[in-house]
Every structure is written in C-alpha cells, then in structure tokens.
Image (tube, rainbow, N blue to C red):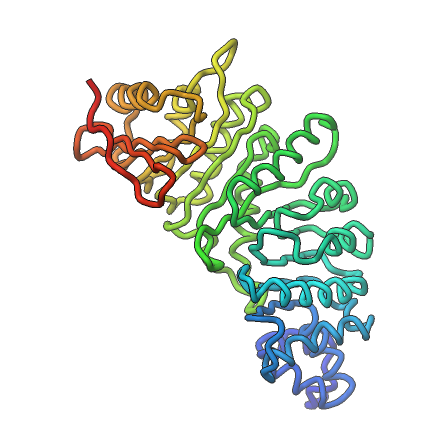
Length: 398
C-alpha cells in the first residue's frame, strides 16, 4: 500500500481536504496535478464571499474580485461551482455604482457555471443593481437551480417559468410595500396558471442597515395543502446552511419576526392559513413575535378581522415562546372599533400563557393600537402625524 498522499483516490483526498481552509486549499492546489484536482474541486464547489464597497482597491478586495475573473475566463473551474453566495454592500449612495460593477462581474461568471444548483445574491437595494442582467442569465438556461435567493426586483415570474427544477425561492426585501407588491404578481400569476409548479416562496426582510434577518414571511396563497410543514422545514434547513464553513447554524433566532401575508382572503381559505401558522410554529420553535397581514372581507365564508378566522387562535397558540402578536388591518377600518373587538377577543376567547403584548396597526402605518396584558388588555391608540414620533391619543375604551 502506498504511503504517499498523492496516490490516494480522489474521493479520499476530498475527505481529507474538506477540513482545510480556502487559503490552505489554494496552497495545496499548487503542489501537483493530483492535489490541484482535489483542492479545486472543493475550492470552487462552495463559494461564500462578501464585499464592502466593490470599488475598494485593498489587496483583500482585489483578490475577491479576481475570483469572478477566474470563473469568467476559465470555464473548467466555473463548471465545478455548485453553491454560490455573494453578499454585497448595503444600499447607500456610494454603494450603488459599486454594486452595479459587482453584479456585472457576477453575471459574466455565471454564464459558465453550468453545474450551479444554489445561488444566493444578498443585496438590499431599492432598485435592480444588475439592470435586468441577473434575471436574464438565470432565465437563459445556463444552469438549473434548486435554490435561489435574490432581491425582489428580479423577473420572478420569468425565473419560475424558466427554472423548472427550482424548489425554494427566497426574496430579499428592505422595503416592505415594494416587496409585497412584487410578490403579489406571483400570486396573480398563480391564479391564472394554477397548474404551474411553483417553488416554495418566502421573503426575508431587514429593517435595519445590516444583513441581520428581521422578518421571515410566508404566503399561504402560494402554499399547497399538506405540504406546509415540508416547506417550513426546508426553509429552516436552507437558512441554516452556512455555505462557507459547511455546517448548520440556528436558522431563525428568537429576535426574528415570523409573518404571513394574505393579499386576497378568497384565494387563501382559513384551513391553509392555519396550516401555515402551525407549520411555522413547529419548525421555528423559538419565535417570540408573530405578525399577520391578512386582507379579509365581510361576506360569505369570510370574516372581517384576522383574529376571527376560524382556527387561527388555536394555531397561534402553538408558538410556545410567543410574547408579542401583531395584526395589520385595512386603513379603511375604524381603528377604535377594531381595537375594541380585538380586546374582547383577548379577554374572552384567546388563551396563551406567554403572550404579553398585542399590536394592531393600520396597513398605511398612520395609526396603531397597543394592548398589554399588565393593564388588562386596555387599549392605547397612537398616531404618527407624519413624523417619526408617535403621540399618545387615547387610553382605554368606554
């Protein structure tokens, strides 16, 4: 039996080299042909890279940018790529031009990545930094994805149509209403073509100028009955996968808000809404804040308020660590009357040992009501007045 490491089978070398850092793999790739084959297989298979300003000229930044030049000029190395995660600078005036340059290089490199199955471009910006080029290369058929994370300004419908094997679609969004308006196109398209194979779709929102996940949102109108637990489990696994170090991390911590958004109650009946809530409670057990955006309407088989949806209170009670519950209602509703109904519901029908705070917000953010357990669920209504400071108006209800 040979004692030389270079005589080992490629599979054994992969097992040994997988414990090496990227810099060590780069060094090993320069030893000999056998080591280069094994090291580059791992070096280019999983790529997780982040940038400050892409226009930085520091040696470290230049080395990162040269990676995309390598993938563009060397199709053999690009063909090894399976998982690519790129984190770009948070949107700012200086970052916009830099992000555009970064996206151009990324798109050029992706044209050779025929084996790519997992693509995540993390960029919170109020416009498409690629100017349509990222959507074009994803739709072009150069690769078939299993998982895609992208911003909400991409051609989501076109991507779903072209990527036949897409299983998970995560949408980055830092502007609440713009993100939902773009996802609503998916929902509308789903109504038109109910036979199309939609991927599991969810939204990742960051309310702060950072990449810390603030809210994970699911859309019951895009969920299939009986498959919601599998969807939530797959999302949790996908979020928890660290593509750089290749080990699992906590997918959603207790500071992250879980949410559901229903744009048309007639297309998402109470049963599927409750099923989604219960699946989220099973898969994200540490959740302390849950939010419901449900466009309900009075009429046959519908209710006027989200907490009156049959079965919802039981489903929400599955969140064992829940401390705060948020509801968003139409700005056409009377906040005072709606808050009175919510208070009655909390006092008479809803039982949850850990819940201490409930907020009721108008969907245009003009006013909100706050109900706290320590004051007997009395109501405090506040008004924004167009400023950042919220002003006290009314305490309690007659």
